[in-house]
Amino acid sequence: MTQPNASPPGPSPRIEDYALVGDCETAALVSRSGSVDWLCWPRFDGPACFAALLGSPENGRWSISPRDADARVARRYRGGTMVLETRFETATGSAILIDFMPPRDDAANLVRLVVGETGEVAFDLDLAIRFDYGRIVPWVSRGGDGSLVAIAGPDLLTLRTPVELHGEDLHTVGRFTVRAGQRVPFVLTHSSSVAPPPAVVDPEEALARTEATWRAFSGVCRPVGDWSEAVGRSVLTLKALTYAPTGAIVAAPTTSLPEWIGGSRNWDYRYCWLRDASFTLLSLMRLGYVGEAEAWRDWLMRAVAGSPEQMQIMYGIGGERRLPEWEVPWLPGFAGSAPVRVGNGAADQLQIDVYGQVADMLYQAQRAGLPPHPRAGAIGGVILGHLSRIWREPDEGIWEVRSGRQHFTYSKVMAWTAFDRAARLAVQNGDGAAAARWRREADAVHADVCAHAFDPALNSFVQAYGSRALDASLLLLPLEGFLPIDDPRVAGTIAAVEANLMPDGLVLRYDTDEAEDGLAGHEGAFLICSFWLVQAWVMQGRVSEARGLFERLLSLRNDVGLLAEQYDAGSRRQLGNFPQAFSHIGLINAALALERAGAPAEG
Picture 1: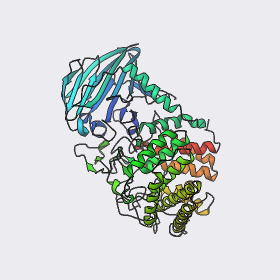
Picture 2: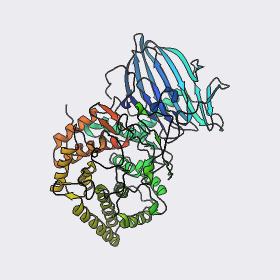
Picture 3: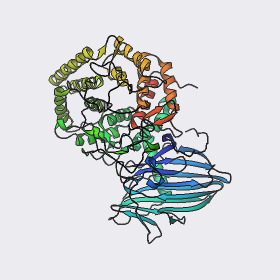
Picture 4: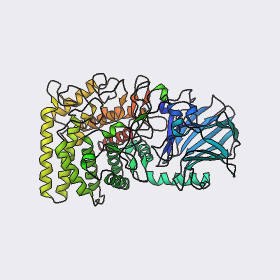
């Protein structure tokens, strides 16, 4: 990818100042200054041992940074991988910090290599391990092999490096100098405190193995014209958000990064939403990743097994159902944005749209040639039967409002999608009776939405029955096939979104000043909504406008191609959990739409 312009790292990290490394079981966020400020072990939703992202260095971090405070910084990922390179240029020389997490064997590892490039560069190391979200200071001692061992309760971290380190004010610190051609390794290993000592990792072999693993994955991705690089980076990011042991996909690897700086809209996204995962797999299948779709489909069949009344909108990455939400009082939050939350109370909500997302994913998977799951038919029939009984009920909707249930338009439309896809599958499988049954249900939903969700005075569909509020999810009506793009009601809805939900040229999901969503404060523009508008414009034949908006959205990525959930055009800052699967899904789908339209990138 193109090298970014070098610039000082800055004293106060922003969300976009971070890059991601991971091993498809957990992930770490690394700042531009070389500090690992977020890492949960042993898996994405585990208690963080580095939580400075949501507090201060005293809540845990691992910094390897040049002593020269004026060092210039440039970053990149090695092509086709999640191996991060941060290049520091000082007055005396330059060096590269390589960060990666190798595929798991018997333990989890974070490897950092400092490589001398020119001259010599002096580095400072500061390691503060704080288990349980920055709260517990471990007991630190020396292992028999000279390694550093930190233990507290069930957790044990082992640091191996040739650099001389010592304790200072409950931190582990050290200084070293790297010269041209030298390679200084650091390997931090997480394991159970009651298990045998973990195997010693060869950092150079681990680097070669990690690169090969990522490149084998990224090599499957088909090119997408002028946007192949951006799509490829998004695909790698989505893979890094996959929990390999089960096939689950987290919405983001972080919790409580704010949707508005100083605000309280701070949520834990380290779980698997059926909606997000379905969107992800649809995107990956379009790029050739049928195997990932099969793994997630199998996870889904396990997670939703049981009574259809108990099907949830999200689960733990192992399929867990209980995700109790609680606040972490000892963490002040990112840039003072409190509270910090762990768990997510939305797990208990009713969101009817997820039935449509799952049905559409299963339909598309069969069309892509995915072998049928032995329980898919039985589970699908039970779930659809349940949906036929509940689609007329109000729900909390795609945006997970906390002010009470409403008859959200998008939820009803996705109920139509569920029945529509079920009818199509039944036709393909030669089951005429089932096809007729589900088509009748789809037609009933369609008529209900058209009768109650369109406001003639606004010339637009509205967020919920009886409301006059607009909602960016309405852009998905033509994308789902609910109505054709040339239907006047669709054109009016797109125009209304443009006129009312785009104050800075980017799409808000809804007007938080007007909405009764039970949540205080503002938020940024929801990035996937702007990508939806790109797709809608392509369908309308407004390809030049779509390309212009898409190029602007690409420019909002950080220097290593990552997007958070939201963006504030006023402060030019990314907002929300990071990196966000939804945003990268939107990027992929918009690029595919532009490619189909034959829209080249602007030179």
